[in-house]
Picture 1 (cartoon, rainbow, N blue to C red):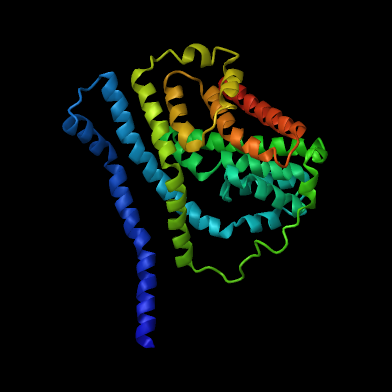
Picture 2 (picture 1 turned 120 degrees about the vertical axis):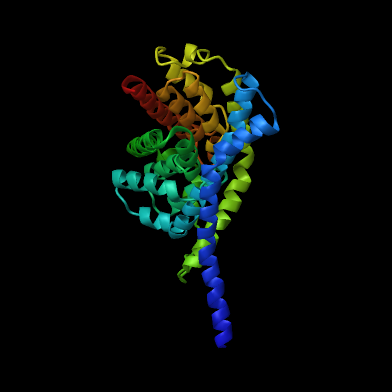
Length: 349
């Protein structure tokens, strides 16, 4: 019996030490990325410095592993945090909250709660059935896909902490304000009748047993496997497009019609972004190059937010539970908020 306990203890200690060892390896790889990328480009591939091809290839070879490393680290950490914030707990926290307080809480919780377009209907129905106000529900649905760990990691890696904080703050403002306006407009009558009759029963009952920290670490590994496994292709495609633009698009080409000097730059960016389908992994590398090529920060953020927050597949999915009047109001309100953010940042930055 004693031997069995010792074996179990050693196993737990090993599981606890493993992330520390992996973190040290992560740091070593990250600090040597530029050196490794230069070695591949100039020594292995034999490319000549200063050419369009070299600029594009260098961008791609450096950015892909950098983004992947940042993504793995942050998703692992958020995967552990998410064990404390399940969708069921989120619903219970938001039940009975007043409109503005609920909007703020829902928007903040949306950052930490697992969400994707395919889960839009179950989450929406769950919130409605739990008595969460419609406007509060929309604050959550706006914040969750727009301000998630993937967006934060990519922004941090490509723009630095200042732009990342700006994006998080403005994204939260849009989610809070949009949800509050939808709540004030009393648009409940435009939710499909059957949605109010759904009863979730006892599904999603919280597990009473408290997770051990080793189990939470395992949840972090699972989150990395699941999320990176789903989005790695978008990252590679996005960075490949960005690399091509980085190497071959003239400096003043994009600034010509999406620059700060053109009043129509922000509306045009939103009109271009709304019909597109992508997630943060695919669009942020492209936005990075747009800014590099002269597109103003406000216009670039507006384009990015419209692509992520007003995802066409999500709108199509929500059509199953919402009438067109509410969907149009949702798109118009969020687009207006994004446009306002774009104009403000183009004026002050």
